[in-house]
Amino acid sequence: MAFLIGGANSAADTGYEVANSCRFETDTVMKRTNASTSTNGTQGCFSTWIKKCNVAGTGGGIITGWVDSSNFSVIYFDGDQQLNYLEYQSGSSAAFLRTPNIFRDPTAWYHVAFLFDTTQGTAANRVKLYVNGTQITTFDSGGTTQPAEDLTLKIFAASTSLDVGQDTSGSPHFMNGYLAETLLVDGSTVAIGDLGEFDEDSPQIWKPKDISGISVGTNGFYCDYEDSSNLGNAVDGGTDLTETNLVASDQTTDTPTLNYPTWNPVTTATSGSAAYSQGNLQVVTPVSGLGWSISTIGATSGKWYAEVFVVAYASLDRTAIGITGDPIGSLAGNSNIGTLTNSLDVGYWQNGYSAVGNSTDTDYGDTFAVDDLMGIALNIDDNEVIFYKNNTAQNSGTAISFTAGSTYHFCLNDGSNGGGNTTVTNFGQNGTFNGNKTAGGNADANGHGDFFYAPPTGFYALNTKNLAEFG
Figure (cartoon, rainbow, N blue to C red):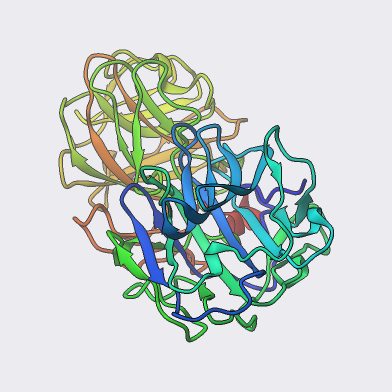
């Protein structure tokens, strides 16, 4: 199966560019009620691009067509992070498909498409599921029930409540991740080739195509998330979806054609556990135990910039921003404010000290505290890093040198003697920090990123297009 991953080949040369995505998490949802009339209710499709943030727990709902607790359609990730479609009618299952695939990659953008046509005489053709352009034909145990012929599906039914971003039947279970190019078509069939295409030069890469011309029908919609003041805008001209707990800053430029890093919940603390939110850009480190995070994307060359906003400190002198050339060993072993355990690490601590590799801490720059905006300018070409506090280069702009010859990631770290600290990071996809600082509108020289401060000359946002050029 072709997966669109977070490397330099991630649809970097696609002809169609997806401008925006919408960030969903706990308690965020978009709602709309279907019209009082419907089309045939037997044909249509649901298609969206997804970048997951949660890799454990209850999964999360993508879309629900809800009539009542005995009648609904729902597409969701379960607690095992497998993708499911359930059609529930008259109090029992009328259709159920469950993929064998496990979706636990917070780096990747996935495209999922369900093509519905219950008029088909062959049962296997009534609901077709595609992931990244490849049809899933073998389903997990218990997940192989196709709907009856000519069954009217609740997602298309008159007056059904459509909920995007939650499984209404599941307590509810909210989507935790990014959605882009979300499409529901009611009353007509759609081919998978209408929704995306394989890259001509890299045929394992499935990439988006323009779907704005697809007729959505009476109860369909198409959301491109390009209007930050109305994220539920149905750009096809239909009825908009109403946002709940979604704000303008939930619009991001992290998309299937411009993939940015987030913090990685898969590679996390060795003791305790960090809590991730806001699209895996906000991190609350554990109150006790080691807490560290690395970026989902790294680079072997190039010059890269990121910003970290300090929201709260429960324990001072125990948090560092930095880089690591060993995302597995990383800063995990650090139990002191200035001692690192890996020669490929560089950290800058809240108390103004820095440390390189296994060396002891060195007086480096200013202390930093709540409301400070810290910058990291990572120069892999010259094996050095400069840290910034509120746009002022520390150590008089003198760079810290580090060991060459590795893939370097941005990282955060808490020492074992205290934590519970909160930071929000911007790798360029969203310059609004926790409602405290608004986007500065500063892009890199390639026009990518929305940073609060202008990136240093020659430094770029770490994303797949810049990586294709410099990384």
